[in-house]
Image (cartoon, rainbow, N blue to C red; front, side, top):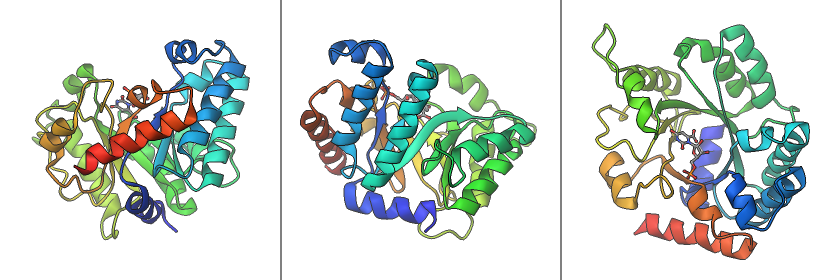
Length: 272
Ligand SMILES: O=C(O)c1cc(=O)[nH]c(=O)n1[C@@H]1O[C@H](COP(=O)(O)O)[C@@H](O)[C@H]1O
């Protein structure tokens, strides 16, 4: 089954919340864990126990694994495998983007059956040109996976690039959105090419109505965005929008039941 179909099923069953696994040094400390690959593993596997089978989508942030070298990457591989075994979709947050010929190698790593880092989807950066992502989009289509392409990011520095207006009068973000929409044309209910639009962006200022794909909305929680902000940015019924939260949920650890309850509480907030 295609990624967009699997995602639609998963959110129907568990709600739209995407929980991030971001093992920040401060969180390892707060959980009483050592700042090494062993501490990382304990942290990440506690998250798998808490969220696997209980939320639609989990997003491990690759940077916090890579910082521990090859042992950290091995933990990321285990997290991907264990979450997939639990039935929870995995979005590997690696924000890859490069010239097409190198992109093909990233696509092999993150979007191809048999690769230990391949979850169900990966985050991509389109700022070498949307077309440079084609090898990843092809690999995703071939293997039933998805991608989430940065459009309007949650950080304040993003807008000077993403809201810049090109020669055709469209903002850079709108041209990314339009390119993703073309790839999703005809998909039902959701295409496999998602976008990232931060919950913190304030006035949306772009048109997402033809996307026919999912929208990951980070910035919810620790970066300050609230449910009211989500509604202000995306409208009331949030169709296809996946609010993403990491630290605001993870601060409830290290007890896995408390972590799960925190995720359920956010889910209920989103339903109100
Ligand atoms: O692609 C992302 O997930 C992402 C895009 C964006 O615009 N802003 C953003 O915060 N993120 C990621 O989402 C997570 C946010 O974490 P919290 O602020 O702790 O909820 C981090 O892993 C970020 O790297």
